[in-house]
Image (cartoon, rainbow, N blue to C red; front, side, top):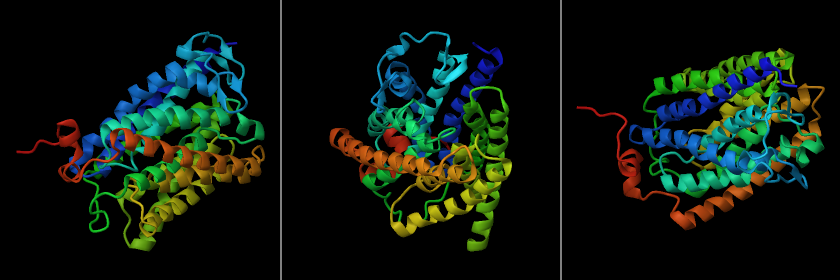
Amino acid sequence: MVDKGDTLFLLISAALVLLMTPALAVFYGGLVRRKNVLSVIIQSLFMISLVTLEWIYVGYSLSFGPDIHGIIGSLKYWALRGLGFSPNSHYASTVPEPVFMIYQGMFAVITPALITGAFAERVRFRAFVLFSLLWALLVYNPLCHWIWGGGWLSRLGTLDFAGGLVVHASCGAAALVMALVAGARKGSKQEPFIPHNLPLTVIGTGLLWFGWFGFNAGSALAVNHTAIQAFINTHTAAATGMLFWVLAEWLKQGKPTTLGACSGAIAGLATITPAAGFVSTQGAVLIGSLAGTVCYFAVLAKNRLGYDDALDVVGIHGVGGVLGTLLAGLLSPQVRFFPQVIGAVATVTYTLGVTFFLAKVVDLLVGLRVDEETEYTGLDITEHGEEAYVLG
């Protein structure tokens, strides 16, 4: 039976999750150099149109359609055909299924947008478009079905409350592959690439934090105690993640930074996501403290390991998503640890393999990376013919 309160709650939550994608554009935009601001922003914005249509025509059906051998959904709901306005008892029993569909669609939109931070400032726009569409089809949709759509991992007992595996671990693994295949930015080992506008990143952080309440609390799919606990845990982990990241860099580098505060908050949010509805507030404090510390050192490790993850997608989202998934199995009596391990390994392994294949195919078809002159001039002018700031 449709519950009007639950329906309104999920519609508002869907709007909050949508806000996260332009918020991500602002967050990423402040972190790159001035000559590449718009190239990063348009990638997130364009993802809204690209993946929304993919989701409507095939993505939702592949993710949540009738199961085919635990691997993928059928095309029963192609172009949303046959999607009635009664609840789907398998997923959301008190809201019309189209409401559940559009809510889940917002998750599908932001996930490939997160990956763009890894290859920022050096990939062709046409390559980004082709890669993102293929990745949504061949990586996001199967993973979504495995864990949320009744696939083999859900049958095994793997639990992911709001996207620690489906969203964060998958985009982190994909980000690692794309950073390696695209190669480092020119001069990355000779000079520091300093964010050009940290106030912009602070605004993006605040909007992401705000939208994340829809991301996590909304994943309860109803107005109930789970949604309330997830809301509290989301804020608690973000605040604790910020605190511990700043403390870690203060002790190691001698100064607390605004960038560190933003990164710590996002790390806390990403890490609590798979466990938000499963753990207590004290569990959220522990998860946030580990997120701020572990993700901080994971970000530092990229310099020793030699890959250029431009905006720290691997260290924050990838590490945070896996960490939170495993901690859910340790801190919650309703989550079993072994299926969490299997889910994390399967998600990362599958994503690494398919993303590598897609990156190579895209490079062969349209060329993945811009030429050296284009990279030196900046992608805003060369790829899009516009500038973020017109001075003088």
